[in-house]
Picture 1: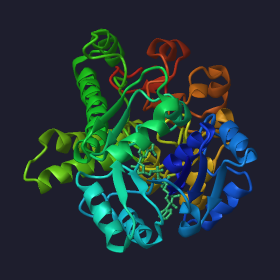
Picture 2: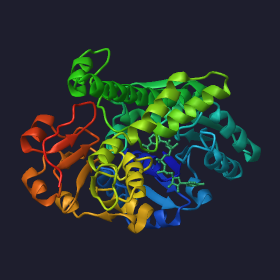
Picture 3: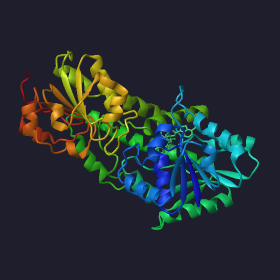
Picture 4: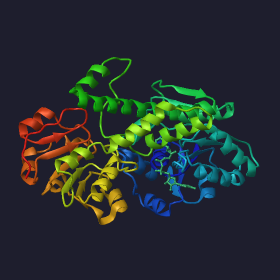
Amino acid sequence: MKIAVVGTGYVGLVTGTCFAETGNSVTCIDINEDKIKSLRNGIIPIFEPGLDVLFERNIHQGRLKFTTNLKEGIQDASIIFLALPTPPGEDGSADLSYILGVANDLGPILHQYTVIVDKSTVPVGTAEKVSANIAKGATVEFDVVSNPEFLREGVAVEDFMKPDRVVIGTTSDKAKKIMDRLYAPLVRQGNPVIYMDERSAELTKYAANAFLATKITFMNEIANLCERVGANVDEVRKGMGSDSRIGKRFLFAGIGYGGSCFPKDVQALAKTSSDFEYEFEILKSVMQVNHHQKTKLLPAIRAYFDGNLKGKKIAVWGLAFKPYTDDIREAPALENINALLAEGAIIKAYDPEAQANVQRLLGDKISFGEDLYDTVDGADALLVVTEWPEFRTPEFDKIEKLMKNKVIFDGRNVFDTDQMAELGFDYYSIGRQPVISSIKV
Ligand SMILES: NC(=O)c1ccc[n+]([C@@H]2O[C@H](COP(=O)([O-])OP(=O)(O)OC[C@H]3O[C@@H](n4cnc5c(N)ncnc54)[C@H](O)[C@@H]3O)[C@@H](O)[C@H]2O)c1
């Protein structure tokens, strides 16, 4: 099939590349000229494990192309995916200007029956709005389908190629047939393609993300309680998670969720609810708790330095909002770094993939380490913000020699409290009792 993908970001590029991998001819379109130039030169502008192999193969086979020209890009396409941004607007609702703008442009340039697919996360009722905008200029028949994307950054290719399920919102039999054919190679193992109406599909995506954000937040509140009552959240997690009704995943306590999806989707669902005169109380709490959770370790850091962070060198391990991505949107690291800088601390940070993105954002406000050890050299404290696997078993004897104080603030519980005590570190984590063993210098 001939496919066009409008918006070549994390979702658009993965969608386009994976559909090229199943034999389709795909053109990815983006208004960002630098991005398209780099893609045409064979350079992937994001870090996503496994994407490079598929990207190179499909470019080589001539199945994957890139352009900034919408009209040229959609020529002869029978399916057009919209993988455009839906950032939060000022009132928290999803900003639909990107999607509705492209929908306006599409109408007059469609030349045959086309299925237009909302891949972006969009509020209930958007398919109808997209349809109305296209209809203003269209002279041919078309259908607008809601097909929310559930991929996770860091494992996006795997999620896309082997989805747990595919949700397709459409009431058109013609569109259903085309979508069926397109997705068939990805669900050969029998994972379901679930058809529903457009509104239910749109809501499914928000319901899934809001539920996951709530699960994380519930566990973070349990962690906060553990600290007060002398319990250990890791033990509680194991005890709870072995109940199959609860499940083991998404139960890890930490300094809050970030990223480009959970924060904005929880906010947008709460806004949709109040627009429909229903106050989604639990989501309001989730947002509030997560906001506080992100900077939860700051009071302990301040207290450790008697309230004065001026000139204190803080090493930060982890900048991306989670491991295996370079995405720093709404990353807890940024909030912590900005707060520490505001109090006069000096920051040196390390992340295996996200340093360039942070450098673009913060310039020379902070410096960057070459590796774990260079980052902690001369540091007064270490703050761990992202649970990259390479942080889990470092050479502590080396760290001990390099750091000025043996103190670690761990927002992701990557270390074992007993080991920290054995090694003589002061160690503050989430939902576990602090380890106090060294004397400050
Ligand atoms: N990132 C994720 O993990 C993820 C997962 C599932 C769903 N989603 C949803 O998918 C959508 C896209 O997210 P993303 O993370 O890929 O965003 P992104 O910011 O990485 O990519 C969006 C791209 O669209 C381009 N763009 C903007 N206006 C354009 C226009 N008029 N024409 C062509 N291109 C244009 C931008 O330049 C950018 O490259 C959002 O609604 C998001 O909520 C994201």
